[in-house]
Amino acid sequence: MQPLRSLARLLACVALVISLGACAAGPTAGLQRFQSPDGRYAFLYPTGWTRVQVSNGPQVVFHDLIHSDETVSLVVSNVDQSNDLSELGSSVAVGERLRREVIAVDGSGRSADLIEASEREVNGHTFYDLEYAVHLPDRDRHELATVVVDRGRLYTLATSVNEERWDKVSDLCARVVTSLNLLI
Image (cartoon, rainbow, N blue to C red; front, side):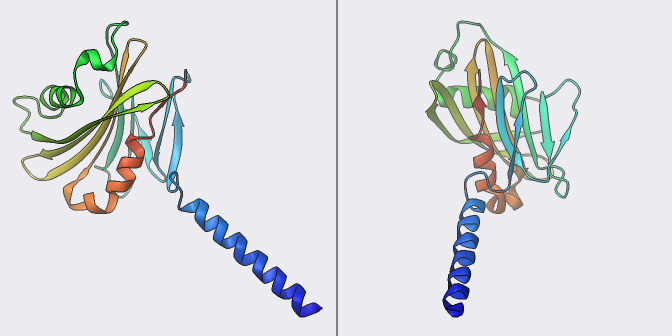
């Protein structure tokens, strides 16, 4: 009887380890939740990254402690209260405008290519997901962004990493930008 109990305990422990392992491999593994103080939005950012304050820039910025130039940032801009995202243009048009007016402004020393632009619907909101190759004088970077309009505000959540690390962190970056959620 004792060997059967030991075997049952062992099987229960194995089942627990397997189920905990499955939880750790889920879509939020390695990510923490950030929610705005006013409760309007939330998104995920990589565990272990730290928030930094930026003057006259994005509303929220996190960066990796080891690779400090790897960032997640959220910019909130005002738009006409009656606008929805499609009124600003297609995903390609908005992606190109973001490229020209924010990422690679004339005279900035940067150039950028819009690699991909797509559209998705979440809880009645249209999101445009954008991917860029950004060329700086001393290195290349990769950026992912998502944009959405809600109640007169344009939310742009973006991740930026050096191209040499892109293959290692691309999935993580994609999970971050697609995690943006409008709450009210």
